[in-house]
Length: 140
Image (cartoon, rainbow, N blue to C red; front, side, top):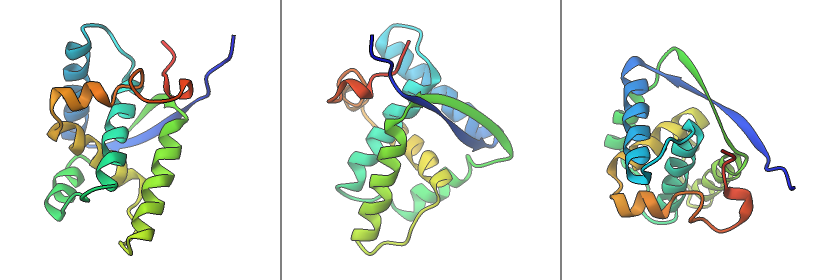
């Protein structure tokens, strides 16, 4: 049996940021109708952000909202190694578009903003089981 590569991601969240992450997680779990790991929520959020980067980038208002979720509480979320690849791709896309770099910590928060704005259909379409490649799947 092939072992899926995973890693742990560090989110620095405010109490409001933690509540928002949990709201996103709850929404996705309800849509799926099952208990899911926190990493699935982060994966879906980053997938949505990666898709946004190829189109219109989020605006300053989105960055302000996402920044409110940044805080001193360190939360660790285990997920697919693909999130690191998506983060690198987003950074490369911004450089290619002559946009200033964005810290990785802010990218995770902007991803949660994309999650918040997404339709239920978009969330389901960004689920790891829907994405191409077996390496995208999150271990149960």
